[in-house]
Image (tube, rainbow, N blue to C red):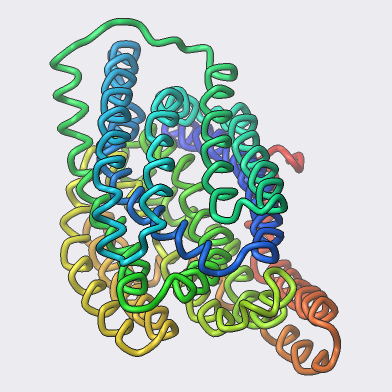
Length: 487
């Protein structure tokens, strides 16, 4: 690597690290507030209400694929005529938002008939307004991401979460049932879009360029195709449970999924928001990309490993403390889905490399075979139990990770040993297990809160000591790049 190339790599790495710090701060504060709100709501609302909102959200997720059309990714990856591209993206996003709001209103009764849940019609229709509300701030949000201005993004993201939490809890206490969740979602979305216009100075203009629109849509088509497969794969478990079981069972499964989704899977997407533009800035040099990807994988596993292992070991007290005794059936589901989330995390961000170099087609080509494999496994798992569905997710994740490795190895010229060297978090995880499991058994008989604290503190101590001995240099380097520790 030349001196100039190395300097550029270091500059991008520092910017990405600091941006990720702000993104994690926003994510951490937002998700902490969200989990507190969900915990309170779980004590106030019955499982069937969460089941109804999950069915409605399932419908929204499928329609959200069309809502994006990959325009956001196209705008981030683009290197010329950015002002015009932003205006084109804004216009298309508004048009699509209006159309999807209308489509949601029309299809809602048919979704209710399909799942045999009459109450879900009105819920879906009202939630359909989020498409329109989101469209006004979507381009501003993408521009902040492109510039890696994640410090500014904290305000609208926390505003969304705070307003949604306050409104939902207040209405739940007042006895509004499922509508407390619906109205809270609408209020949070409206506030977020408004705040995005305040923190991002860019303003749309009445301008259009057909050539740019075609280029962006062409790039975004592969992104949208991959997102469509991912959305169907990721929510097919909800689909099968809603079809075979009842709304209460769906509510239990959805709540069990909430923790690994919030603490692990969402973290991966938070990192994508930073890594995609960072990788895009290195798209001309494959060696830099390879180095950056491997470094990313190391830090991802160091972060994700303790979260997943912690949820597996402490699932029982976590459910009792966070959600209450009526949710105990969620314990084994949480354990399996936590293991699933860990497997998903391994090499997760190689897709950002493909998008950064203008090859999103690689994503969809690898997603197609996994789409059918995952759907088959989830269908089989749903025939047995809710835990069977979670196990099917885990099996599919193992297959997907193996496939992801072989494709990445060929495309980025990665050897198995190069990848294995970055997975030292596995060794550190042993330190967590060696202290957390004894704490689990020694605390039996105490209150769930005491048990949770004992397991958490023991596991954290074991993991941090292991990390300090195994990956001290990596931790120090990350703190220096983030500006927390001086060289």
